[in-house]
Length: 492
Image (cartoon, rainbow, N blue to C red; front, side, top):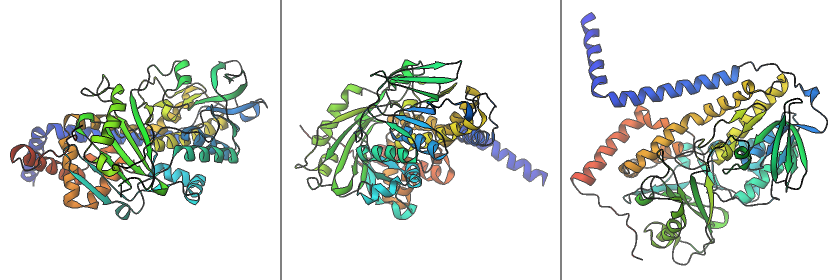
């Protein structure tokens, strides 16, 4: 028996020596998963500190929280706080309905929150949400697959909702729950009075609102968090948006991502809305320490967006020659907590796009904004009971968002750089979809929509077939030459 054990140990040691890199990655992923689980457990079971600011000490003219920004993160936070009995001021610089330039993809975790709030039912009843079923992607060498993931997953991985509809319904829902929604309230400054433990938030017109906690939810540029010194640099990511009128295009799918090699790890996407309307968007995703990979710069967005519509062999065919397309709009993306010193401090939380809670690979941020908004509400409600709003209590919020989705940011950043350096990986995924069909497509959809973390790629039942697929793709492309590059721009 001892001899058998000794031989087995020798085999294990030999495998580890021969596969050091693979073992290191697996060990790292396991460690991250364990740390995330530990952080979540600590956040759930931690006993908050006791403090002097109990509910009965709040002045009559003050709020438990002042939330600056009534986008998805701010409004979700306001809704759950109000439902928990807190007094909330929700400040919005514009008047609803107002637009927001975005890809409009609402992923599964956000769908669940919207359903819990009763907003999803409103969107569906008013024909403002389109659930994706037929979808897929086109890889850097032109390998494509469009399949049906809903049947495999048992639900749609995402739905498309225009932000002009989504934001107003979530904000008004928060107001119905009890939040004091103040529209046309453009915040100019915020100051904290340590003596009474209250923030005073001032508008451009001179109006003031006081609150025990300040929640910065004012978007990717986050002027307030920047002014307060928590955000140290402008956002580095950017995306475009252009709606295409229904009935004027050739598209027959619900959602497809296009990965032209000249803008990796960025990508273009087409999402179907109700009434056959489309959203065409182009994402430029930073990677590496110095910003964008290769020669792509933020200033290239308009050229890439417009050239794709006319000369991209796949996008131009999907859109067609007679499509009625609106003028391109653009919005900044703060990815993976980029440029943020911290997301919490004494009497302060930073949430949503303002905190950089956007996936560093996909550029999707609606679901993380809503999940983070709910986590912030839970944290504030907990502090409201204990009376302590210092950083030792607000840190519960950071533990919560890291456990929910932040633990995956490092893997998304790494994946973005891998895709830029080794686009053959996406070619292999597309080829594997062609071989295995919707089963592989559904796995990809789960990861891209946050139903599964990016570390799911490292699990043996996913990693091993994918590794084999990459080897097969390499042989086909580089050695046998049986796969030609079909992703070439059409002549201008």
